[in-house]
Image (cartoon, rainbow, N blue to C red; front, side):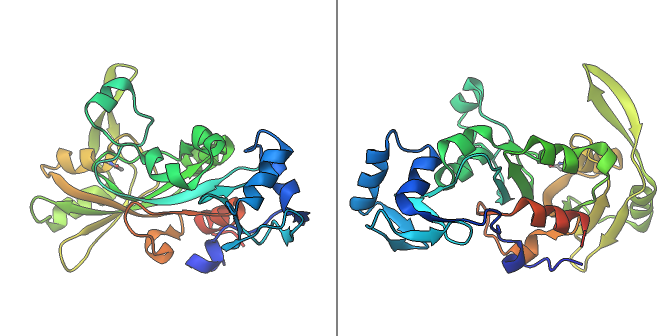
Length: 271
Ligand code: URA
């Protein structure tokens, strides 16, 4: 059993190295020359574990200390980066096209822009998607294999949503949601009817419906409620597998870099 709290989930080191600061900087690929990397140190633009370091030969453990260049976290190349985000409303889970930009849409990727280097930013993918109006737990990673491992229908990873509806739900509605309902899906330009798989459904004291699905068809939660005559007025993803947003203590729009191995242990409850 993995401790699913914020401290245990923070990114852990994987490379057992003590390096000199100028060597580390040169290897990040962020500087056009060794000289430029050294000058960044001498100018006081580099911090190691939060302290400005002006000694280019400073030795530190790159596994345990974070290096920032003018506020930007630096990484050695070749490793993947993975983040969890508390997605706010009114942001979309894709890169913006020109039409979306003209409409003033915002993208989840922009929320990580100031926290990652250019290469990481360009390679980031979302693990599945949340609708523009849905809030809550979203994973972003540069590792396509991780996306597949979590989001593939074969993985059957549970996703738990807190659903607020436009009117109270009755016991018979809850029973229908549990058993599965018929929704319409659009696939390859064609509409087809789909019977949702059995789900776990609870109601909290304030009327919030907590729904856990092991599948993830497009807009599935909204479609399941719409089929039963309800409008979803609030939708928030609380957890993916055993990874629970509440335990990560992230404000809306905030993100946290996580070690991929620990993330998988949390999601799949592996020891
Ligand atoms: N189901 C939905 O309908 N929307 C989401 O964003 C996620 C699940």
